Length: 399
Picture (cartoon, rainbow, N blue to C red):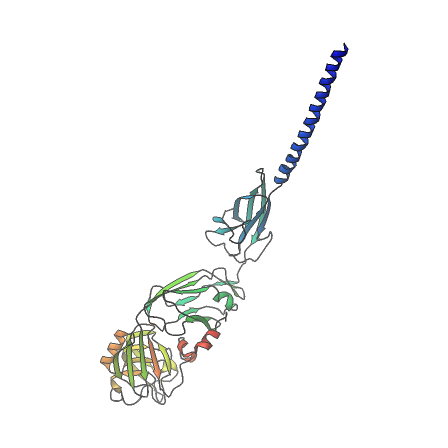
């Protein structure tokens, strides 16, 4: 090989070496990019609530899935028999990395569930995580009764009354789930009249022509002492015209107002000194075209002094202690001048018939200037308006 040819070969070898060096440099750069890709494809991490093994949970416990380094792909909840629970997944309002699964129907009491969540990382690798939890088994479940009844029309004095069949230990937990909405603004609040009875009323009578709805969302609520809410209930009623009457025992008159306008002023006879009518705002409960009044129903024998048994017409009950507005033709001579009844408001038959037709449950009869005591719990279940507002609000478990 000549010297010229040898020089050409040496140049080619040098260029090849440079090219090789250049290729190694490029590979090093690519390798750095590969490491970044490997880092971004780390497995998705999934955290579940409730935690695996949780027991005695309220059925309404939130089911949450939090995913980092990936995207949530699927959430299922199944009972112990494998039956899947229908539900929907939505992002949490407070944490974009967390999704909340909400069942279309509430989870059941005393049931074991398995929560399964799947998430994918950047390279579509799937991570699957499960959690098994069990809801509480109540000692017993309870559904309260509610008044007024759904779909009824009542007067402006009718409170909302919720009656529980067993004492409520955690009153605050229950009260938080009793929501009242009305078409006209009110300042109403709840008052626990006993461990098993809570009432709602505004500071003054309801506004006339108001629609009211009570939502008692009590399923899954712990009442205390092993008692849990059985189901949710919603009751809607209408407050009709404002009928407020004043029975003045000193003036011996019954003044009847319809929406603030006096429509009747009747002579009457209230309870005698031996059986005085209770003072305070009474609420109309029921009306009877005919009723037999018997003193033995409140412990006084018919044949005892002051005892009686009478057939009465046009009787409008205003308390559960035996007080009515009713027809009393036998006392017409005293009506307007003296009080001779056993505690009722006596009217002539024609006037009682008019008042009977005018009245609706929830109307108010305010008794004033009687020598008797003020209406109280011993007189029945609606003495709400005799309780001062400051005392009433203090009766809330949330006050």
